[in-house]
Image (cartoon, rainbow, N blue to C red; front, side, top):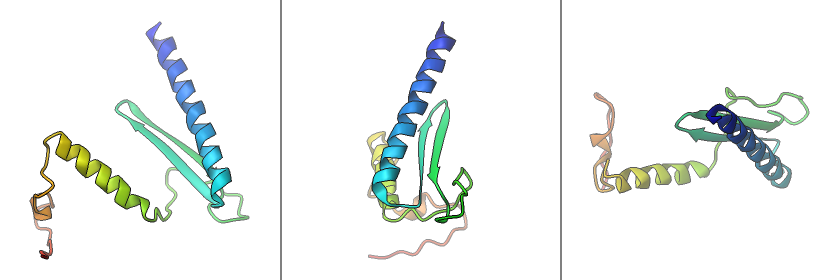
Length: 108
């Protein structure tokens, strides 16, 4: 029974992502859109449109594209979530989390 419920939930999620992605794509004017949902038990990626207008090539998981200013929102969300969980402090210097040997410029 749990497997059937999980399959139904996965199908409902796939349908919701597909419908939401299509609505965003049709209203955006962009040549393509990739929408992803990441959960602890896996991820779902939906691609719509063309990598270049007129080339009939749909984007996929390996497509490279500009994310624009949205990356600032993602970074802010991740950092504030980690701070809320007590895993870092927003006042910590970046060098504290940089890989060993990395050069981190100090400003301010």
